[in-house]
Image 1 (cartoon, rainbow, N blue to C red):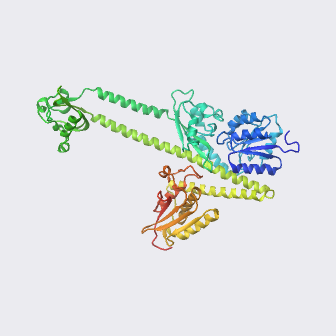
Image 2 (cartoon, rainbow, N blue to C red):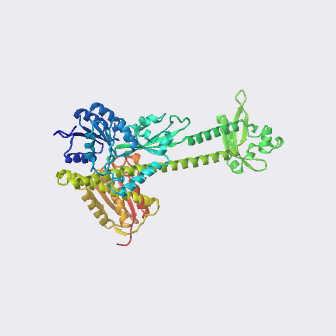
Image 3 (cartoon, rainbow, N blue to C red):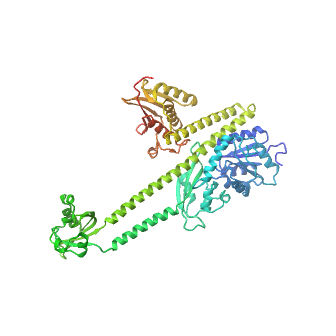
Length: 638
């Protein structure tokens, strides 16, 4: 058995998160039971490393860019049949573990907030090479509650409930299109058992859609989402709409994809029915023979009159013939000499058509569709005009109602889709943003607690820095989520007073310089400016603007205070290239991200809403790349 000799069992660790690889590597080294001989960040590197080192164990993540763990598993087994492959994943689906086992995995370990049992679990895998076992999730107690505590466990359970009970099909998909988590609604839409979906390629369970092309749209082209309508095997007539959105790492690289699936069969049938109804209506109108048809002489006087014209307009032939046809137009139209203008256009172009109000003999108005055709003799000389009038008052009313109904339906559908998209994005962003910092902070703390004396100074600094960075990230996330929620519910408390801007900014800049020693922040402008604002909310807004500049821009960061008669502008700019034109329109929207750098996409939205809640505003100035926070000027001194 590997490890019974003096030589330590060898391990290759493959995970796309560098911080996690570092923690796992250190933990295995400190145990004195394993030797880490290689590290990689995707499935292709895993296969190459296994072929090169032929290690005793391959510890590999499931979801990674490029080639994921499930894809690489059979190739790794073929490259080194003696290597025991252990899948190491943040997904706790039992069906996914079964899928990994079917592909040759020796074990499936769930990523946890502690590494306490990782060494023992890996030794257990090596201890019995003839069997294939599934190791329980590390860090779980006998009652199944993670060691990180009941609070996080409760949040995780709530997330699972929201995901599982969502009214639309939802799934987590690897960057190669393989399903690693799905909810009940998706299983129902696809009419497949949920366990069967796990580990399956999405392209294999749907038809009529280029799944690889959708993934390329996100991963290669960098789009925020990709969607397509398609069919499902075994469900004729059913049309589904699939939408893929990326879940990004702190470096804004796609980690995996979030899939939303909705049944749009009824919606499309309703749209087709509306089109068919409109076509039938047009056909009916075109074939109805209730027309007023009469001739006009070159001057516009009535020369002939048919029975349809009499029924239409109420005049007998004796009353109409010889009269100018302008008698059928409302007074305001006759005053503009519009009837004469119609004849001029018909003579110039051969034909003139319009719709407008016309008058009957009794003075009532109706909406008419009018066609005037210039009539010429064989020699080309002008004979007069043929005029056809049709009463389309009812059709106009119906079309207006249909247009209003269609607009209302489109607006409702757009709002529903927007709510669904925001809900799904909120769940995906929050889950992803929480998992990384909480996991890194807990694992780092556990390792420091148990092995402080064994760690080298550089390793201790790395762990402490990772914990500090993760804690700051969690504080920002929680503050942004709480503020956004209160803003949306109009429940945000504002306590405004006179605030000296310069002193406030100096304290904030000092904090940022200590937290980011490499940063350069300069203050400029009016040192005596005083604003009427809530000090805490001003701090929150400025922290978001400064953090945005430090994360996305280039040093130095300049903060300038400019006073106006009624307002004070606080301008924040850096030496970077500014915001791309394609991003500017939605820069202050919720969940708007540029595709570069981490975050929830709430920061700038919160800045603007906080400013407006205090009687000010926030904007981006493309001319010099400055973000401008505007607040009311305070007359009194604090």
